[in-house]
Image 1: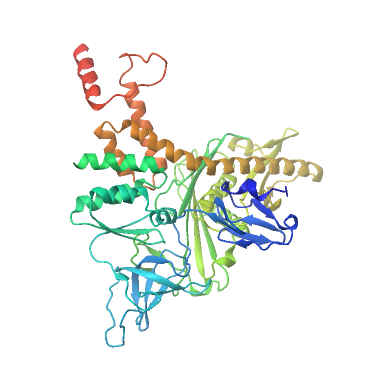
Image 2 (image 1 turned 90 degrees about the vertical axis):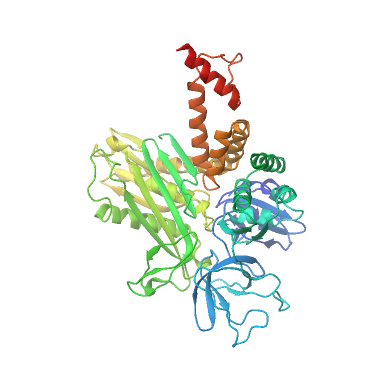
Length: 237
Length: 314
């Protein structure tokens, strides 16, 4: 429809249907398209509402935050065991299909020492295969075969949030909420890219405080997050 | 066209949800998915999952499509939505027909081949019916699908138009609809300029029909522009709510409410805060009228002093 220069849409909010690039005007470049974009002959249209991002030299993608997760390879997620079969566990990772966790995908896993997970166990796992149309495959080891903190998470409290919040918590440098909380409280936290976060601390009030602080920090800027955490901590002390 | 209003995130539990108003017609839509579409015939399967501990009745395995997502849609009207309380809000012929129509419209624009063997559920409920419920449902479903992050070709917007007393009318309400003239409902993909829904009851001559349809398409484009703004506002409202809370946070009462609202309730949180805000102002009408017309904020101690002094006066 209208011709839009790519610069005008980058870092803007886009909705499904917006044509953000017109390949016929771009010359002979190779463009890499990430999530949320779809090619329709010469026009690149947006399929998910979010912000359009661009990284040099030629990558475009839409950054959006949803409650549902799209499985990608090498993502670390928190899954809940739904069922166990002979060869693998069925794990729910909030994606379009249940994921399989092979029974042997643990450090030092053999047929003799298969772990027994009941339905409802929370696991910290890594996505190994994620093709459309197939159930994703998971693993409780890292790429070299070591356990590396993967596996069941005991005690603590798990809550669900959006994928955007998970990405913010895992960004580097450390997210301001976690930094401000970490200065005063001691707790451990596991963040899954599928929108699930697990918090554990010595006392329940700390757990609730951390969980509330994280849930409220989604749309705040850096300064606002620090102020919010300070106010919450004042109520405790 | 009547006044329209749309909001995202009305249902906290759903993956995507929206509330849409066209004049007096109010509709709420919730989208679940894409999620696993599986199960044997007629078996109710319940599985433990934090967000969806449901016994949801699963489809026959034959309905699971191997290369596409399955889109299901259910349209219901609340008992209290029409003038007379309704006996059977779903399962009657009109609801089934409208469910089918909405499903076909949304399926045309969702990129189903990206999510094979999964299912997407759209639930639309009419809270108040005043004509144009079909269009309001489609607009609400579009907002909810975009909120859930389901890949779509384009937004689908819909509007109805009619022809009464030799004038084309846009966005009929119940009175105009039951006057006996034709009712044309059009659903389009605004950027791609394609029609996904076209329904009409009664008869119209061809040339007048073209005028009426063109009018409906313009109404749809206006709704599409508005929906685009709703997404921009979604990002701003959240930060506004937090600023209000920070101002109130000198008082412990409001801090407690802020903590309870959680993340799914941008809508609820702002509603609650506005209520409190209004009550605070109303309770204090004569005391220290603000000099420049703006509102004043009091800390908890000052608030108690004012309460005590008003009690002493009365």
